[in-house]
Amino acid sequence: MAKAIERRGGANPWRIAGWSFAALLLLLPLVAMHFTAEVNWTPFDFAVAAVMIGAVGTAFEVTVRATRNNAYRGALAIALAAAFLLLWINGAVGIVGDEENPLNLLYFGVIAIAFGGMAWARFRAKGAARAMTVAAIANALVGVVAAVAGRNEPPGIVGLIVLNGFFVLLFLGAAWLFGIAAASGGTPTEPHPSAEAT
Image (cartoon, rainbow, N blue to C red; front, side, top):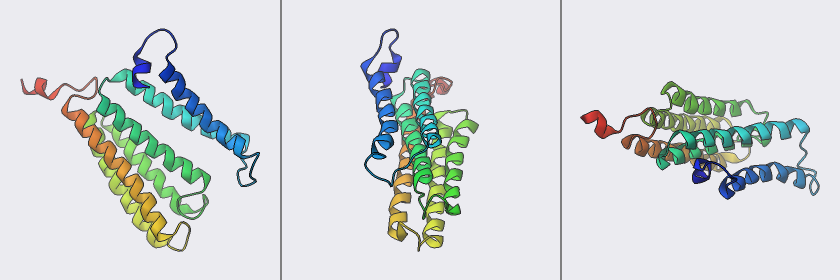
């Protein structure tokens, strides 16, 4: 998808495939509603999902246009995926218990830390790496609170440890890639380290 967006003029199959996949994600609940009563989306649900998917796709496109550094692109893709999945799971069924459980609100704080920190760092790779590391720590702390306070709620202690561990690894992975990007001047406004030394 990255190379697809860089090309000018003419439709690119990678870009078409990327947005087609996004459309497919929206169609899945619609199809599922015809086969099970457990999936019952309203027009508002579809609108929210469309906004979320569109925001993720647009943010990635903007990033691809802004930098040619693949580490930075990969880091942001992972961070966006983590935020999207946290929002999607919380909105659909909830990570702790169901979507009405107030403990799930803590995960919005994790997302705010991750992307608020990136914005504070002006999207520079070095600052973004720090923001993702702090978000991983915050997610781990939220996981501990969720496992203690929500131990009698589904998916149980083991399920909460696995889910939160998964998101911690995603944020740490993003931090690692942002660190690689920082070492090579990963953003357009960020000079290459060798240029700063001269």
